[in-house]
Length: 235
Image (cartoon, rainbow, N blue to C red):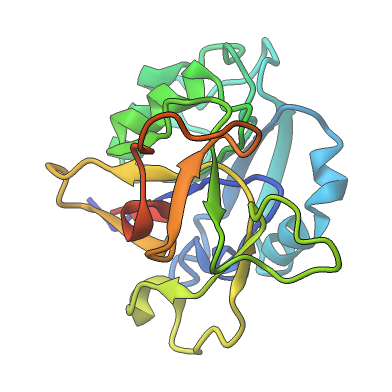
């Protein structure tokens, strides 16, 4: 089986530049990508990312996640080489796509990218859990950092954070150093410690924690510091 990646982004509103390198340029024939969306408006809001993939020769097939006609394979043959899930609020996939079909797709050596936000459904969380990643159980929780937040005219609730704690791996993020920190706003996730194939690509700072920014803390947050992953991969 060849190398494949499962990539988790815990914020659908802010995508990272190195995700443009998610699919291997060494296999130019593996270019068919199914993109499942909550709303076709995402094609416009994330046009820079999608255009970067098109410029690299990928053939993107956009469909709504609940389209009754979607399928990953036909007559035992996979129709796509990669799957992008930009549908965090989907409650049920359409057609013949379900959690088992997605996991089989990955296990067959195909690439998967999952982006989630505070609206992440139980379905998306289940797909992530099957791959060794657990999003914060509190649906209202966001990553907060009172030290590493992005400075703006109005400081707000410090949920817009600036992170530069990248994994040191040219294979994953490329040999060119990412000079500027990444602006992140969204939910955090943790990694299953028994899964040796899952890695943090971008971690929160030691001063970060995951909680509801609109409520006072009554108990210690379950996710804190660098244990919070913002972007993870499974090989």
